[in-house]
Picture 1: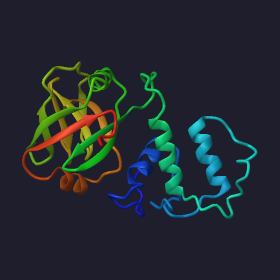
Picture 2: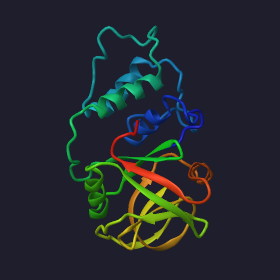
Picture 3: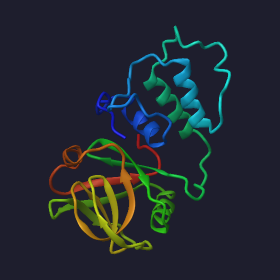
Length: 216
């Protein structure tokens, strides 16, 4: 989910993207998140309900939402930090895993697909970050060798900007435009347009680091 009032490169940008990808926040509609708006009791209840997976019926003690300086962006940042500090466990079936992609000084977030290929990629990254040298191909993707083979789950796919694809079992591609072929989907970069992704990846060869934790 992309919000028109959440600019790139701010301290809260990745936290809001994370909260939206986790379906903790949805914004006001029409692409507006209300980044600096003071959060109300009702809004905080809804966000915490989503985060905790249980209903809060009596509000938060000592908080009436009328005078608190807390903003919607700050709440998203706090929840992401809480999530990052929880002990690491393997995701259960159907649970989404967050992936971090660092390129040219920018860190993007992505959600791994729910298949054996993505699980094998996650297990690989559990041992540490993986940096891949990627090159342009066909004016629609960056592609580079993984250095080992992963199981494939090929199907006919028409790619979109942000798709992370396993090609021939041993190459990783990031698509910034459309292409149709038999591919294995590994994941999807969150909240980025084709032009934004082109600008971030740049032209020519580039080093791309995939990790399960945000790089310092």
